[in-house]
Image (cartoon, rainbow, N blue to C red; front, side, top):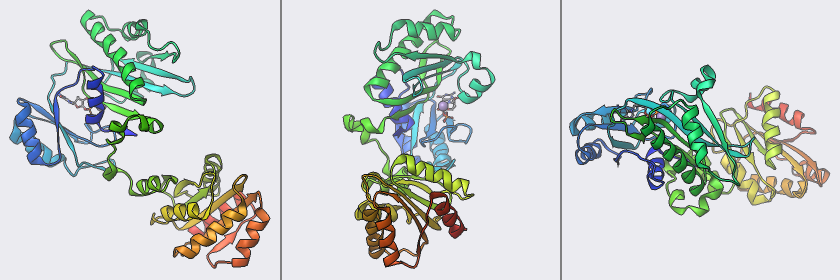
Length: 380
Ligand code: GDP
Ligand code: MN
């Protein structure tokens, strides 16, 4: 689960990482009031779950409450890479002398948390990694040992910081970031930029915070931060129905059982020169209700022109899935063509059940590739 900047900053604040004072606003009038309450110059920041807001015109300085209102009016409703701005974070503006970058992320291949630090902050970190990889300091944390103070010193010295006050403040933020990462079950904590003010004060000017979905049950207050309105409505529906669904932007609806098979199906549809509309994993069940739920999610996407149902029966029996498909078709009006490939446990019986019922819009394919080709043709 990705958090908004203001939510991530709240977690930073709880962890003792310095951030600026701010207020949330959902209208230009609220932005003006927030600016008046904060006093002085403020920065009006679009709250959207995507980066690069600054470049997209989603971050603006304002010298007075009236100006904050005007800037808020410009930013609200702005479309930033497909995300419409509905919320603003109004923050006391900071003076910036230097912009650094600090993050802690989960490095799956190393099975360890990974720190990255560079004094070339503010810009795209991918750019730094590509153009000046030597400027990006990387350091893993052994989860059994936990964080060790020498690690903060290593990052700070290897990053080339020479000012003792900066070294001390950043070393402390490095340590607190690890505490926040563990305490809130984060997958990513990124501060870009981590600034130094002209007065030598270090603070987090931005926050990118991702919490492990599987740990949300331990953090009800974070789970509540989820902004249902901003979610893709199909993904919300899928979550409610316990269907594993990821929207893609093609026109062939893909339904498989098991994540591995479903991913392979997405690949095979692409191999057959088609464009998958989604990734939908029926899971281990495959009972009628599961099929109805999955189909009701997939068919809600108007781009879907054909559906490829790819089932490998293991514990899930193909006859059960075939009955589920027929029941689903009897319960919902579905005119889209469906191609079904069944293999594994009770596949013959499953195919016979489908052949006997013979719904007009359903065809059975002998292999995965054949099924994918048929579905791609039907979608064209
Ligand atoms: P992003 O573009 O989505 O990464 O948003 P950031 O929060 O990182 O802001 C982008 C840029 O806006 C920063 O790198 C700063 O240069 C500028 N910015 C943000 N907040 C302030 C502020 O309080 N004062 C000043 N002077 N600039 C700011
Ligand atoms: Mn940023």
